[in-house]
Length: 111
Length: 113
Image 1 (cartoon, rainbow over the protein chains, first blue to last red):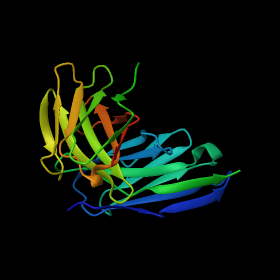
Image 2 (image 1 turned 135 degrees about the vertical axis):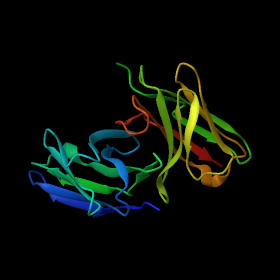
Image 3 (image 1 turned 90 degrees about the horizontal axis):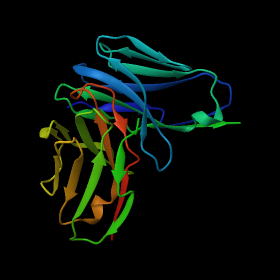
């Protein structure tokens, strides 16, 4: 059974720092991995989608990597800003085409 | 281009009642999936529809059901509501069939008293 874990559960850093969020999964048979952000009381916003054949994706200050063999993905945020404060979730599409979610990392960027 | 629209945004029901939630996907998207989000269980997959057919279903009781119409709009229904059904219900649409990027609505927050 696929399980997705995100570490740390919460992170607080000063503005301007570069930071890394981690996501691990137990079964390497995935179609893709996605990173989302969720603001309080809101829906989810897709940040990056990495297909299983890809190693990384970049969008602006965000870079996500995927190492399927080790069951890991990282989301790198460069030059963090207070507006980046949110909960970041990763999810994998498993072999049954179901999306399996991590519990999220709550990120606070202090001005 | 309009995003994913979910209605109603908030609703309060009592135990034993039933509820219907609606989701209008992005124009051109044929896949609609539903998720339940609670503080205790996090995000859990409910079901996915593609071209009016349920292609995938999560591990939820039969009280949870859904359907998709020919215009790709989808509804989900929960019958005989329980206190534990209180949650944020999120709908997502995708152009592709289960492996594409997902676009989420703002969600419907259901409170069961």
